[in-house]
Image (cartoon, rainbow, N blue to C red; front, side, top):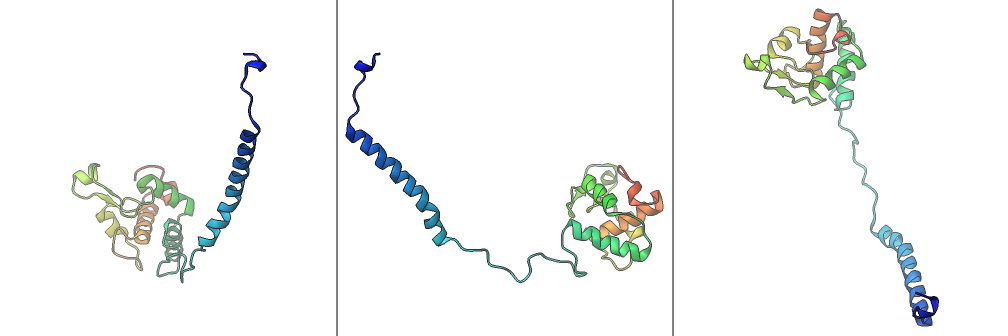
Length: 162
């Protein structure tokens, strides 16, 4: 189609388009200002992170660090990396993890907690000063590391199910 055959745009169409563009730009500029009037900062809380009774963060990092402090007092070898590696492999960091399908579970003694300890092992290698609850993260880590130290020299030497 030749240029002569194209319909001619009128001046009013260009004017409407300019107003539309200007109006859109103004709206884009105004939206952050309108939104900002209703925004508010997060209200600070008295405590930003829950902590254990010993003052460590109540998370995987804190549980490992608290266990390492107890282990150091009791002469139980192990490192942060060795514990972390085994926790992630055994329970993905879930202190409530329980294995209901392996050979231990078939015998009625499922593996439990962060490091998947069975009740008889937990009881035999429980470390004084920690909870008697197998699901308690610090007690579970510390007992498992005590067992690993007796059996393998350290939790650092454990690279598979133990």
